[in-house]
Each structure stands twice: as structure tokens, then as C-alpha cells.
Length: 424
Ligand SMILES: O=C([O-])C(=O)C[C@H](O)[C@@H](O)C(=O)[O-]
Ligand SMILES: [Mg+2]
Image (cartoon, rainbow, N blue to C red; front, side, top):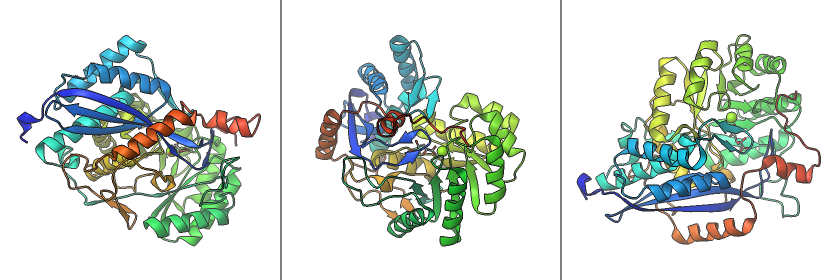
């Protein structure tokens, strides 16, 4: 098929799905029994189908459906038109309101989060039409494999009322070392990220120290999602500076991060105080962060994320990649983006090892040595398993969840629980 035959959008199918998730603990509570995601399928009049993946909170799904209804007729190569259509559709539907995901992420405009899965699907279509991988459409892969990090969580042994999962309890430093050992032996990761903000800082520092002792030579990070005060963050930076490659969001907000930054040479990273282009200028002016975690789901797609990479390079900031619980369509998109972003030199986050269910056919994305080979096939290089998609959609319909609600779920188990942000 030639470029001119790529065609126009004929219809769009938006499918919310639910997949099982262990009880992973974080600053705002605990992961619910299911992760909600949406798979977007964009069909063209030439019979091609492009894929995208995004969050599935109810309000987000409604926005996706509104855009899906407005997209037929659009040229698959006109990504500016996509952004215009999304802006107009959301303007009409919501008055341009912001969006909130899981109590940790608030954005002032919903446009970027809604554009993202459609942009990925259109790039997938462009790649399928031209016979080129998405990484080629983003300027070309500068690496054949994309390294990811082992993403460790404190966790309960199982969801209350359910069987224990195969990872068991993750509370003590020794248990977290065992969690890391399994993840490293199964996936080969050479970087390790610990999700903190759950226990008193001293306990979490001891966990980092135990990990450093058990895995010398592995790049370590801890991310308490803003659970600490400026003072505690400075102490953490002093105590852990020789062990960490960066310290992620120790304290909330640009002014707080800037104050910590003034007291340490340890790079500070964020996916909380810089989550949109409007946050870059104040963060750079205050020298609040030295590493920004990109995330194409949040930043408006793959091309806007590449733009973020360029801005980080301009201002001498490092670039890493954030993840939320996700399926294979997102892993493929993350891999193409990271492959085509020269200054994305840190191992990317992924929640992939926590997942036991999938919607893409096996084979295209395999971890080896902690990295994933960039798919070489046209587009994203992954194919949907329609039966698996239908089963996970059925699970969505029956699971009873309609939003990510870590705090409410935690409070239903631990009455009186409030998020730990800036607590210690
Ligand atoms: O780096 C981060 O801040 C995250 O990965 C945010 C996620 O929501 C994580 O905390 C989680 O899955 O609980
Ligand atoms: Mg983070």
C-alpha cells in the first residue's frame, strides 16, 4: 500500500478493559484489584487499523468516545487536525476542563491526555501504510533495544478476601530485596526503582541501602511521590546520594523541589511537578529538577514527548520515562518513543512485570537483559488479540470499578486513611 492509499478514518472503536493488579502501595493508597485501561482502534477506509492505549477513568472514556465520533473523515497523516478536532470536541463537551487520574496527576487541560491514544493510533496507521516502524516516523531509532527498570513496590500479600499473589508480602527491606531478585532474574533489569512514600522515611532509606548492598552496580532510584518535607528530602539526599542515580519527587511542588535542589548535587527527577509544557519555564528558572520523566499518555502523544526531549536537552536536563500500569500497546509505543529519543538515556519505568493479562498477541515485545528490542514491523509492530480484548472488556463490565481510586480503596480497608503527601 502506498502513502496516498493510507486513507481517512472511517470509524473508531473505544474499548475500556480491566486487568488484574496486585495490591501495590503508594502515597495515595493501594492499587485496586483491577487496572482500567482503554484500547482505541482507528479504522481507515482502506481497511487498516491503528492502535492506541490510555487511561479508562469514566470521564476520560466519555471524552474519548466524543472524539471517536468526531474523527471519521480525518486524514491519518494530519496530526494537527487531530489536535484541533480534540480541542473543539472537548471545548464543546466540557468547556475545556482539566483531568485527574488516580489522585496523583492533575492536568489543567484534558486535551493532551485525550489526543495521545489517537495520535499513537494514527502513527501506527502511518507506519502500516508506509511499511515503516513508528520509531522511523519519529526520526529513526538511535538504539535497537530500550532498557527498562525493575519497578519495586511495597505491597500486601494479596487483596483482602482474595488469594495471595505470587509475589507475596513486600514490607521489609529483605522482602523488597527478594522482590528485586525475582524481577531481575526474570527480566534482566540493570536499573531498579523503589516506589516509596508508604512507610516512615527511615524504613525506606534502609530498603534502598539493602538494595544497594544486594545489587551493586545496579542503578537505583526511589520515588516517594512527594511524601516528604523539604527537610526530610535534604536528609534523604545526604544519606542516599552515593547510592542513587536520581531522587524522584521527594517533596511536592516546584518551590519545594528547588529548595531541596539547592542543598544537594544528587539529581532530582519528577513526574509530578512538571507534567505539562507550562511547568517547564518555572521549573527551569528555579533549577527545581535535573531530570524530567516523560510520559506520552500525559504529554499529548509521541511527537509532543519528543518535543519535551528537545526542550530538556536545550536546558541541560536529563530525560527519563514514567509509567502507569499498562498493557502491550503502550509498551510498544513507549519502546518506539524511547528508541527515537537520543537523550532518553535513563532506563524507562514500566509496571509490566506486575501484569498477568494482555491484549496483544505474544512475540513482538520480549524482555531480555532488562531491555525490549524495538519492533521492526510496520507501525507499532503489535497485533491485537481480539478474544483477549473481548475477555478483558467483559472483565471491565463486571469488575465494578469505573475509576482509579487508590485512596478510597485503601480507606475501605484501613478506615481513616488519608494520603501521605508531605507527611514526613
Ligand atoms: O513514578 C510515578 O510517580 C508513578 O509511577 C505513579 C504511579 O501512579 C505509581 O505510583 C503507582 O502505580 O502506584
Ligand atoms: Mg514518579
